[in-house]
Length: 575
Image (tube, rainbow, N blue to C red):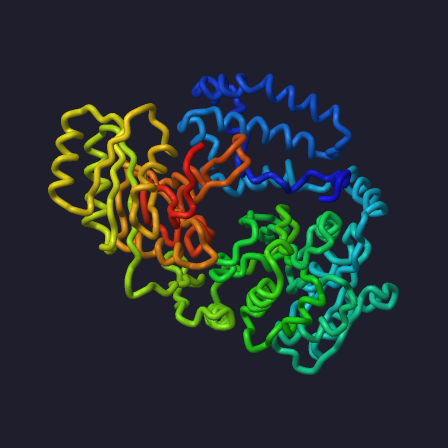
């Protein structure tokens, strides 16, 4: 973001799906006094943050300041609390809809003060590009089209143009909606085609009308948040070299009830191979779309994933940006299942696989296989090629006593893993229990691949691993806790197949507690002041970590728990 360039709107930024009311009632305080104590213990700190904010020139209008303070209390209470206290902050599945509605009302609702602030800021934006919104209408319903059309013409950001393709059969109905508007507003452009029966062809025709520097696609029925194009333009003002911006989205019903939010990660090429996670909403530089050959009708059903794959491959990762705000509402289809809908869905899945196959081949990955994801058959799992001669993996396990845990871990690695070319380096940090010392003796006599390294001194995880890494002979290092329990025999082969890819340095696994709650789905920097686990204590399926996702788990059940691993060059001596 350019220096001094501040966004006056602070909505739609919260990543917590927690209903704070769950710990605010007197009954909850009586049942869980430690939660109240934790909240009070951070109260003074939150007060200082609040005071500091009010002293700055940053203006968070509407509900922005309230939302920030509220989620600050929640984050700090969660960070300071015990596992039980943290678990109570995770919304229960049956409360998800209520929780999200509460979140939307508190954090993602535009107020008149917000609108006024946005309009005032637009006049001073350093970069105000024209954005062409493409609606490939073809054959569609009048009600659905009207909602999409209205969401564009009511945008707070005025520098847009709307490019619509309709076929001859739909034109009389849809003409009632945009006819008068098109006559009065030159920003609305319509092309009429004969027998436009596929989205890709309609989108390509509408693109021919576009003159904007950037283009966005809006399928009929879907809705843009009224601040969507302003937020995009604001983001572009901070980095004018950006080629692609994508946002978060949720679903919206015919009666405008919102649900199922998709809070997306930063740019992740592996996740895009698995599913089209960026298209709602994605804004492309128009010259980039022209360069890669527009939308291809032969991938109908996955035409936008195909475009995303080709466009992202034609630019660099520093020119792809994620805007973490829900600016797009995808129309929620009827839950009634029709045979034609099922057939269309199957065709879309097949088109996605063909698009991914085409992309992999174009990048030289002809030996990689495209298969259905284990948990989500409609998504893709990429099976990367594996060398005939499996590289030696050095498994490093720091430990201090707890012979029961270590024995289980070693048995899993050596006897429940279908990967033979490994060595096991157990780093003993002053174990004194007789059971542990006897276990060391049995292990070294039972398997020549096991080596015990004795390293006295204060426990320091980095020091122990670095010492073992210097002794390791393997091309790949695996850093493993001593309390893991192997679940799937293919875990190590799967992880090594990713570690050997030239563009991957570290591979980790989705970790489960014994009750199958998620320990983490990776590690992120920032929350809790340093690093924290993703999706901790979640239950059920997290889509992004149930398919191929760079640096995270490649399928549901791998290790519980473990540590990331990678090539030996990834480690550096402490100090």
